[in-house]
Length: 90
Length: 251
Ligand code: FES
Ligand SMILES: [Fe+2]
Picture 1 (cartoon, helix red, strand yellow):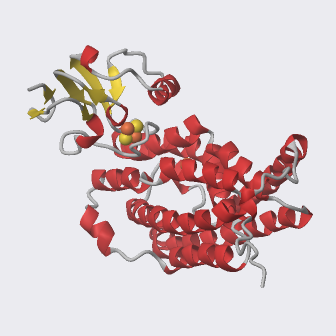
Picture 2 (picture 1 turned 180 degrees about the vertical axis):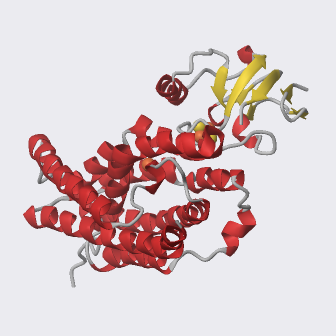
């Protein structure tokens, strides 16, 4: 079964098929849940290729905040289809 | 007896807006100038109006303003959803825009709650604190306006909030980053992101503009903005009575 690992909390979650990261409330802090506030930012340590494409909202917010690290994602905006290791920012 | 359609819902008919693009921009400039005057009046007449822009933040004042902010957002989203329901029957496109705004704003109490936790105010404490009389009045006012007058009065609240956020909050967030520490205001900084990334001020104007049907509506927008500011002012005056006055005496 594919696994999501959370570096900061040292926890992991197994799932089948795919999972929306917005469901990971026990591991990631969320705010607006609509890709606007940046509270749910995570840095993908590995497995970025197993996540859905960056959304327009992610591009827009990172542009506003001047975030240039391509490994940064907004958890409320992405889905995972396989293993990934995430570093929770907040 | 002949059967007529009993539904007279106007929003089903796509009509040309009263304000065309140019007239709308002109009206916005006029309302914005009016609001600038109101902000200036606010700074002149509300004690502690620019407190958060100062070098030091009075903590009990900040604490209570955060708790109240959570409540204000919660009460307003309900009152606004009530207005949204009415707007669906007046102007479906305006309703669609307001629904999108609600989608973005609905959970913003979370962001203030997170900042409250950062200064040691627990969720339970927030839940146990009753919102002030003024905030409850403000919520009541928005229901009243939607029920008895014009739902656009409720959008006026959103416009006022967004307009003043755009004008004032960046300065506040910067100052508070220094007085309270950037880490402590992450939620509020995130909230500001949302308003700016989306240009909520323009979004709210677009809705108002669609809802304006005649000159009288434009006059009424100003009346609503004034009354809403008066209600908000009551809260800040009370806050000053509770915190600022005491502190000034101590100083
Ligand atoms: S929770 Fe606000 S951007 Fe994801
Ligand atoms: Fe906003």
